[in-house]
Length: 263
Image (cartoon, rainbow, N blue to C red; front, side, top):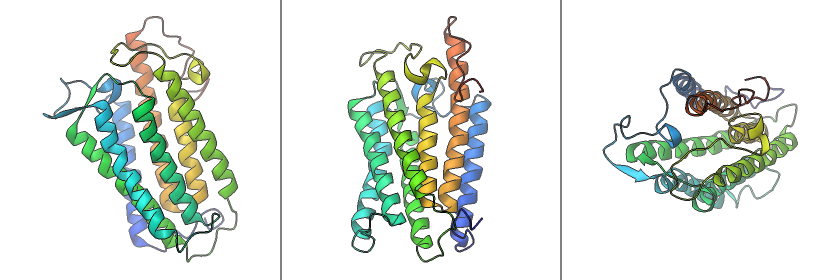
């Protein structure tokens, strides 16, 4: 393991947190496969939601992302005087997280077209989760700063994967936004790009992005988070494909969930 990761045994807290993240994402992924979906996007329904207070999706998503963006911004400002070398892992990780949430907020405001709502409590839980994940990723990198470097440096590969992932994700979000006008509640089969072969290319590229962050970090927590996120997104993609098949008789059966020609 020291070949690829900083010592995972340097912090019992990070070990415990990593185990909790993996367990939680396994539960979420399994729930998606079994049809018990998180209530947002096309899976939101007032009949299935236990929330009494609902927000417009745009407001709810801003509530999800803005606090995590603020955490990454404040962290970078506080850490910059000490870790101002652009090649320092903690500076890179903090910057990549900051860019990630800036992009999310940009898409919420200028790209996505929304029609459904989201429960306030769901939005608050998601917001707290993003805050904890952002803070924990940065903290685990701080712990690793004083440890021996892994034998193989994956930073260059990680940065390449990050930019491929974030660019591909944005491109397919733009394609999705062109399917309908603001306020239009009708869903359509996505076309263009990798939508021709998989239902959720935006999820696939998000998986690549998170794996890129894990490669730059080379900490146990970042790697577990990338794997856990991938499991959830695979489950969500599987559920999304089933939803399209149930809604559209002309849905092309050769289009897979998230891995072209495979799954």
